[in-house]
Every structure is written in structure tokens, then in C-alpha cells.
Image 1: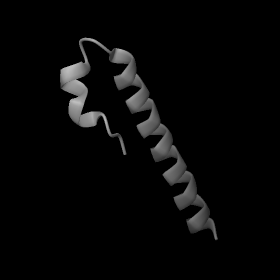
Image 2 (image 1 turned 45 degrees about the horizontal axis):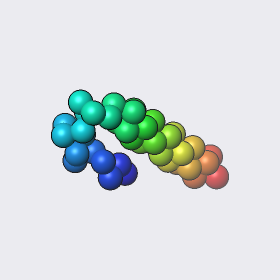
Image 3 (image 1 turned 180 degrees about the vertical axis):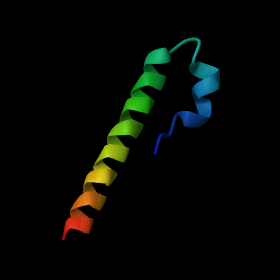
Amino acid sequence: MCATSVNVFSIKKQNRYTILTCLFNASQTILIHIQILGTTVDS
């Protein structure tokens, strides 16, 4: 889901934006999956 999750601890001091982007992308992916599951259940 997030390729940089393994390196979060090593880069968090120099690049917090990457971590925030990673978390944002992860949350977006979860929302998309929820929408897909919702439409699957409805139909």
C-alpha cells in the first residue's frame, strides 16, 4: 500500500512530508476500497 512505510523511521527527521503523503495515500486507498465494498453489497 505504501512503499515508504519501511523507511519511515529513517527519513522522518529529514522529510516529514513524505510520511504525510504516505498516510494520505493510504487513507485514500482505504476510502476507495470502502466505496467498492459498499457498491458490491448494494448490488
